[in-house]
Amino acid sequence: MHSLRQLGGISGFPRRDESEYDTFGTAHSSTSISAALGMALAARSKGEDRHAVAIIGDGSMTAGMAFEAMNNAGVYDDINLLVVLNDNDMSISPPVGALNRHLARLMSGKFYAAARNVGKTVLPQPMLELARRFEEHAKGMIVPATMFEEFGFNYIGPIDGHDLDSLIPTLQNIKNLKGPQFLHVVTKKGQGYKLAEADPILYHGPGKFNPAEGIQPAAAPAKKTYTQVFGDWLCDMAVADQRLVGITPAMREGSGMVEFEKKFPKRYYDVGIAEQHAVTFAAGLACEGLKPVVAIYSTFLQRGYDQLIHDVALQNLDVTFALDRAGLVGADGATHAGNYDIAYLRCIPNMVLMAASDENECRQMLSTGYHYAGPAAIRYPRGAGNGATIEQDLSTLPLGRGEIKRQGQNIAILAFGAMVQPALKAAEKLDATVANMRFIKPLDVALLQSLAATHDALVTVEEGCSMGGAGSAVAEALAAAGIVKPLLILGLPDKFIDHGDPALLLAQCGLDAAGIEASIRERGLAKPQAAPKLAANG
Ligand SMILES: Cc1ncc(C[n+]2csc(CCOP(=O)(O)OP(=O)(O)O)c2C)c(N)n1
Image 1 (cartoon, helix red, strand yellow):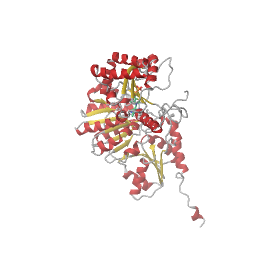
Image 2 (cartoon, rainbow, N blue to C red):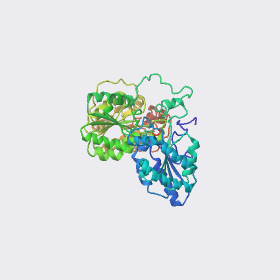
Image 3 (cartoon, rainbow, N blue to C red):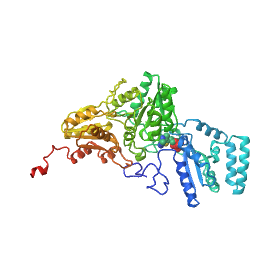
Image 4 (tube, protein in one colour):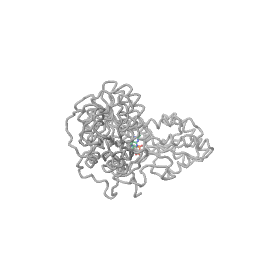
């Protein structure tokens, strides 16, 4: 455990390649019922008497995917499938929506449920069946069926998940029941550690801390994180424009929207862990003239991809996407890496896509995207930037225009987003030109062509997958203009990158200043072109 979430150490999430007890890799939520149903039906088709158990949180239960799986599973009477709902009445922040109300209602019928469970734990199988029938009969008279029963599951609970003396026999009894079973377990988030019980939001996913002291408030950080820059901008823009509404799929804290909710509660929407819905919901708001800003991690927008294409971009609706955690994210690892957004967004018509190189530019880009009358995404990395002074106005950038940051010779480095800083350092050693391209789409083709005309070679650098990314966009633009020029594309390799310190990981991928310089030298671009050998030999 001492290597948890560190470079070369074990992952913070279940992984099949780490342990045979990690039956399914997970980190994006709400997948367990689908996976367990697949396993249960595989066991059935192989004639194996095995049980598949899915565990899902009450927050994760709000995702459409969980209901898709329930809908699918509920018709198989002969499978060994158990869904355990771990209801701690918390997502990362308090859970939202009608499901939460439903669970609360089930909790309020606790007496009835407790009576049922006692019966279930002590009765032998034939008696159980009798009790179940009686229960079904009684239920019709006393309380309405739970929604899980309507889905075809046998609902058991709610039971106290901390009371092992009752939980274990209940689970043992359930083993004897055929068909989809649903066990509603009630727990307390942080149970057993007083500080976590008192502040489950803070303790949802903490880093290393001393349990005797608890998490200590960090000494005032010198630099604002990009998340804070976004949160400040959102509040300021909301004052300037009454039409602005903010949407988060269950990530209020992580996305920097705590202040916004406090100041503008009627313009704040936490939609639950429901990225697909978040995107189409934003499209609906935009149809009616509101200006939705969807704050979403790059990795989680993957869930809403079809909705982004079909519901937002195709109708050219005015939705702004604030893409946090773009690029490598560190300790969370491959499941949470925001490595693909450039590739998956730049191919969508009508989309504007920007990458922030510092905090001030991030703010300007958010305003630029907001005022663009169509879908726009602004990607920014996890954590703090380089401490740029943030202008408080809401000024915009000219659409599709980059800027020269450093004038050099021979080599032009076209840097995107967070890679501008290391590119500038590398350029010092190489006397290269550096352009902060700002826009991946629309790409500044005029700037690209002038750099190609005045330099021997071009290098692109981005913190995103090389395949289909910003470098590919540059290559396509050069090809379209018939320009043949040596081009080196630097980005993340075609493999999943594990957890670890982001600076170390970037260095491993050759995306720090030294790595960029080394790649350019290795390709032989740094030296003036030597005369070809053949010509020298006559
Ligand atoms: C698709 C997706 N969206 C968002 C998240 C971020 N996230 C991680 S845990 C969490 C809350 C989960 O709540 P719950 O399922 O109730 O589990 P608990 O932590 O309370 O046990 C969220 C929103 C995620 N992991 N996956």
